[in-house]
Image (cartoon, rainbow, N blue to C red; front, side, top):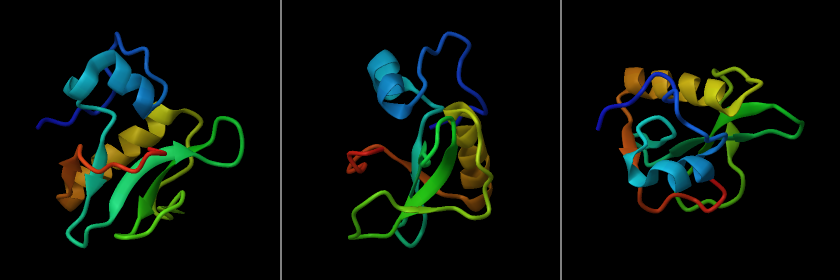
Length: 104
């Protein structure tokens, strides 16, 4: 699967749920990743308005995950997703579509 560097110009999505509704499984920007350890990486909002960042969740754990300290907070969901996609490509993580946590 290819991974886009930015959302397409027609994307109405502001988060992964909206992207799935708009594009189904065809979206190649709003993605969730898994590393070799089985950790899941995704973007979600923080505690304030317009604060988004990549988070991770260890296997068998539930909850909102822990923030990826090496990636910055962004004002928009798409900006945080751009950071995660670029990092995931460099790290060689795989895109996952199945068993994605409900809050993602």
